[in-house]
Length: 141
Image (tube, rainbow, N blue to C red; front, top):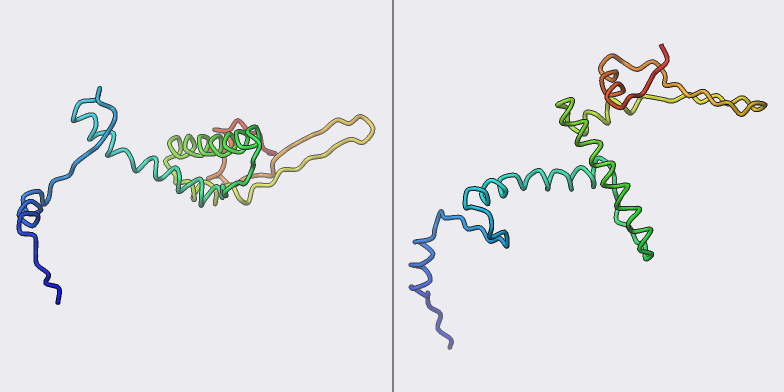
C-alpha cells in the first residue's frame, strides 16, 4: 500500500508567498515601476485581439505564400488601427461604432458613355455624422 503525505516545506513556502505577484520580462532596461505600468496596460493588447476576432471578424487564414500572409495581416492590422482611432476619438466602443455605421449605404452612379462615376452616401443619422466627418467622407445632403 502506498502512503501519501504533505510536503510541509512547500506548504510553508507557499504560505509565505501568498498574495505576492511576480513579473518576468526580458526588458531589463525598464525600472520596476515601468514594468508594472506596462503589465497593467496588457488589457489593451488583449482588447485589440478580441476586437479583431469578434467585431472585425478577422478569421484564421490558411495562406502559404508569404505575400498573401503579409497582405492578410496588413488588412487586419489596418482595420484594427482605424477602429482603435475611431474608438479613441469618439469615446465609443467598437461594437457601438459598427452598429452606427451598419445602416449607412453608398450610392454609385456611373455614366456608361463618359464612364464618369458619382459616389455619395445616403443621409446618415445625426449620431453617425461625426464618424463620417472623422473619416472625411461626404454624404448626400
